[in-house]
Image (cartoon, rainbow, N blue to C red):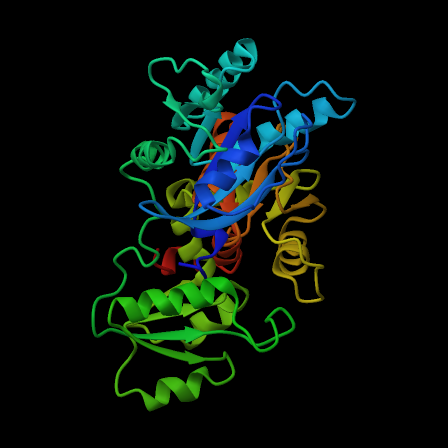
Length: 381
């Protein structure tokens, strides 16, 4: 569990007024000093994330936030960042008793986002009253720790978690050929996260995972006694790999798998039709979870824009990276998102919901490339 990617961990956001003891409670739950504690109100400014293991819950990320009643010169911006952090929160731990007006407002925000809430009162060592429906804790004495952990565990929705990465596409004993370009986009000496996760998922299911590159794919196929049961490739070589794929073999890509694993595959497929109606002057937003410096072979910054402009002329492209994502999407006809391997599923689904609510089409890299190369109806997902 110590190596579980943050994107696959339960995200627990800790909210409360200034000086409610948010950082102290996180340190109590973690049994270590992971957040800065001070008698000064407003010590925590930007949201601070810490990955750890919690007995009975498993791998989590705690998000320590600024007080939502921060009245300092930068308070308004700090509160905005706290609200932004709700985008990927699976559970909220709300410390109450410091400012009831603010607490009621934030409870409404959490309710509107369908985020389960655990309410707690800290500093009960000072004889603070614990209302019904709250957990009483004293971070300084570790009182109430077990009860709080139990409440957090119960708050997790029963259907929590990402769906099966392979979505029933394989069964035990299947031979799966993984076609992975080793170009400038491939990290030297490593595989990218979706490739690693796919290989692990295949091994867990008892499949035979064979790895090759596009150049060596013909030789790999020749060495097999029959066609593989499935070919999974990098989306950037979809067309090339499709041309070499046997007629009796199914084909998909890592990005398409991630579209279902992290997001709403049905909405992504439905939205792909919007690509065909793009025209000069339309605006397209390309959103990438990673914040790496784009390279010459970058899929989101180079290859997809080139494909779009070759077919549809002078479409206008905007780019965002990391946690940046516009609240107002009305200027765009289409959002094209990366696979989202660096995000947890709730964050990607929140972006999907934002697009759906504003009636904006949203798809992902792999589906876009499959559409533009004319093979969307020939891939499996």
